[in-house]
Image (cartoon, rainbow over all chains, first blue to last red; front, side, top):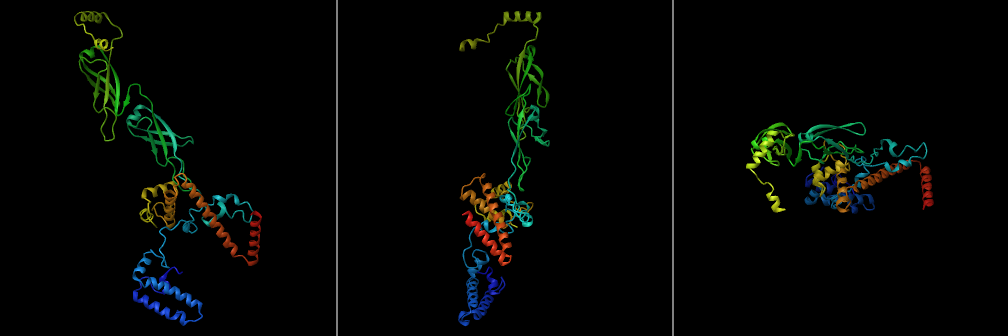
Length: 309
Length: 110
């Protein structure tokens, strides 16, 4: 069956209905089997021309043929053009692999280099294509680097380096994905990603709880009694915090916005836990004072303990 | 050249996301990567991958194995076709000799 019905009738694609009728009649008169007894070729041609006219002469069928919904024989075109229809052609050459018969080349000098990778211009040399695998790395960073963000460089086993920009607020165990920094892909496919697991070294002073920073700050006996300003470390430097009079060990001050930056631009807080510390040496003054004070202001911090134990 | 949209429109059940994953995995390798230009063969290949995954139920680790085998088969078929075409151009008596030899090998290996 001819591919192009228009060429069978010898008309242009845009031909009018009249032109198609005219062309068909002219051919039919010439080719009709009864006008050409014994001429097999003419009969065959007549069938083709008539089949073409059956489609092109019908406005509805002609439209469907033009849109590619039916083929030249009037059959519904299959919805799916199968891959195998292309795989053998020029368009499919990219995908054809010759990896399967690398070892078939050992015949003689004459044929030895005909197949497989040495096959030259046939274009069928495409290898197995696969995205590169992801590479896994671990990166240990300081607490403050995790909190504030940092730029780090990883030295790879092959001597190369990988620059990692660590965003502020990164969590312990968080895995960063660096696109395309993994193993190279095969056969033109993309490289894999580098997956960097972040390990945060603990800090001597700060600990982290969500977006808040916890810190324990020792205060003197007199600061606890009288209150006052004490210098407190934060992740961005020292600040002065106000200790209210009568602050006990365990009392926690909240320094608003001194914690870790959150996604929305807000910050967590720093929680300052006060620890009352007696002086290293208790001198006579303090001893005298305590004895005098005890005589007049006895108090019982352990009453609850006794009652509930 | 076909665009991503053309392929998604014409191959049922294929989404832009799926298509991009396949390209990223190297299962589909459009000739002009920069323009995201696909050919008819790429489109048919997308339909093939879709069938492998959806209709036949192969998973993403099995699909590249199958594609690799399919590509090898078509590579072999193309070489065989080239070989047969080359043989076909030879003089009649050479063709007859080749035919006899092949038939003899087949009998031996049967």
